[in-house]
Length: 114
Length: 113
Image (tube, rainbow over all chains, first blue to last red; front, side, top):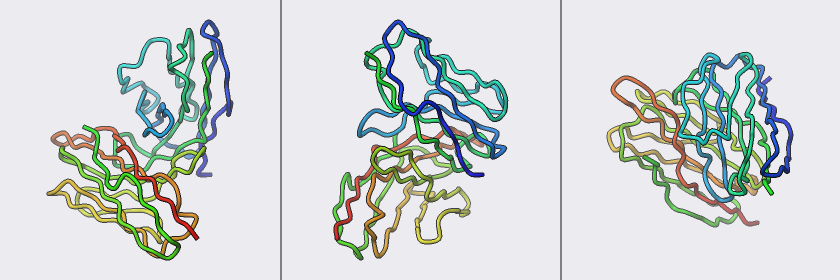
């Protein structure tokens, strides 16, 4: 199984809502990532989990809160978002942390903040 | 430091060849190549590592010049399915440690019949 799954596919939320994005992989990968991608731009790294521990937080606002309940799951909790946070949120995983392993991306969650 | 990709866009006829370049101002441990079709997730194509190891799809070829910190992706006998945006990702090298991927701005490839 070389698949990374993400739910939901689409999400529309108001600025006062709380919602969560979910990501799952069953490849035994030891690193998982959250990226944000705006239209016609490259993915931008938000968070890296290495062996279930948060290893990188790329100065992401606290309204985004990641969580790694176990080695297969990664969540991104959203609270009090702004319209400019509307984007495609991609989850990825790799065998090992760092740039020495290829990353497998999930299909993404298309988030719209009203 | 974000790697620089060139060209920004290229239009091909089926069967033509293309080269996409990626250069970094920093020492690299690896270069990754991904293709993203509209509305879809990026798909891994190739990884090239410091020291010469590389892994990827059989029909894709790429080069990595460690000294120049440059990589090129070679697309030969292009097919309609090759259309999409190609991203290179630079894996920085910090004196024995690997950093995380930084993606270039992308090259939009369109293959016409």
